[in-house]
Length: 312
Image 1: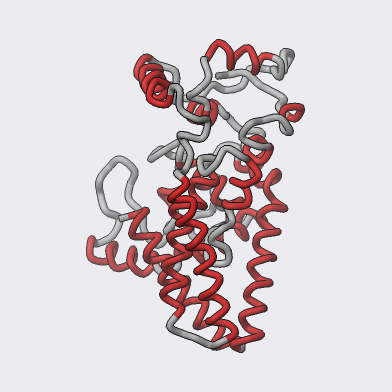
Image 2: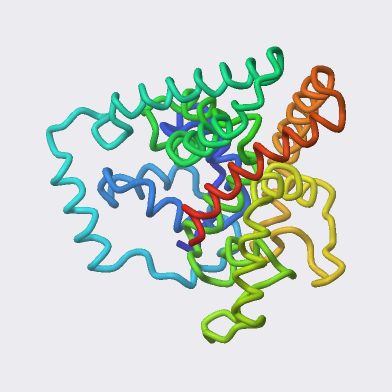
C-alpha cells in the first residue's frame, strides 16, 4: 500500500508465525497481506498495522496490481459469511485428510527403510508416489499456513516430503512470494523453470520451439523437476549462480530477491546439508552407483507426477 513497516516486534505474536514475516522482509507485501487476511475487517487491520509503520521513511513503490476493489471486497465478504459461526480451523485441512497425510508419511518412511535396509527395489515407485502425494497435499498447504492453525506445526509439516520433496525455503520464494502474488506476470518465476531449454514468449502465443520438440523437452525436463527444485534452485540462490545462457541469476526477476536470499540463506543451506546427509546414508547402504540409480529413479517418478499435476 506504499507504506513501510518494521514488523520485527510482531514476529513472536504474528498468528501465522515469524517465518512468514521473515521470508517476506524487504519486499512489497501488499499481495500477501490481502490474500492471507480475509477474515479481519480492513479498518481493524489497518489500525493494528499503524503501530509498526515507519513514519519518517520515504514512501515505498506501490504495487502495480490493484488488490482492493469492489469485486475483492465482495469475495472476502462471501468467504466470511460462509465460515461464520464455524470453528477457527474450519478453513484448514479436514481431520480425515490430515490423517491420510500422516499415513502417507509413515508409509513413505517404511518404504524407505525397506529400500535401504532390505534392498527391496519394488518400493521405488511407491516412495515416488507417496512423496508426490505429500508435496501436493500437505507440504503445499503447510507453506501457505493453510494446513492447521498452529504456525510451528505448519512449519514442520512443510518438510514432510523430505528427502524427495522440494527445498522449502526456495519454494517459499518461488511459489508463495512469486507465483501466488504475480501469477503469469514477469515476476512469476514459475514461467521460467525450464529456461533456457524452452519457454514461450509471454502473452504472444508463439512457440520458441517446434511444438514436437517443445513437448519432448517438457516430458524430459519434467523427470528432473524435483532435483532441480531441491538442489539446483537453492544452490543458485545461495551462491548467486549466473546462468551463462541468459546472463541472469536465479529468480532475479523477483524485485526483492536480494532481501529474500539474505533472509533465507541459512534455511536454504540447512536443507541442502540435510539432503546431502541423506544421500550419504543411501550410499552407505547401496554404494554410490546403485544408490545414485535408486535416488534418480525415485526422483524421476516423483518429478513426472509433480510436473503432470502442476504444469500440464
